[in-house]
Image 1 (cartoon, rainbow, N blue to C red):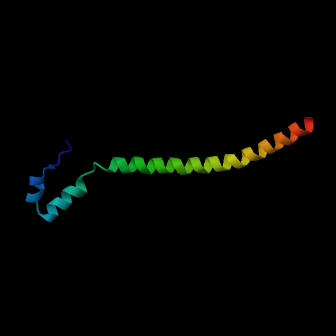
Image 2: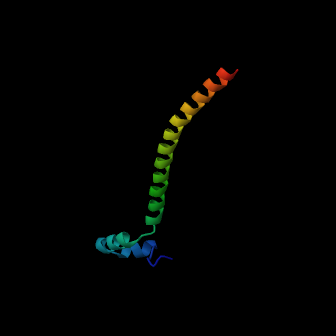
Image 3: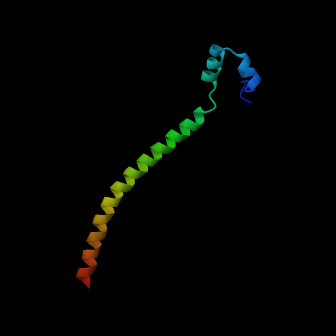
Length: 72
């Protein structure tokens, strides 16, 4: 376990300050948040890369199509 007592009986016996301190010290959700932020960053970078590449690919395909039509 993570070193914190999570039973309902233990939480009822605590005052508000102790409960708040335990909640602030509990880092079990921090890793999930970090992974979520990392995934969001990867998505933003991928969208930027695909949109830039997509514009360049459109120009390349247009050039190729003109060359193929001219060759026919």
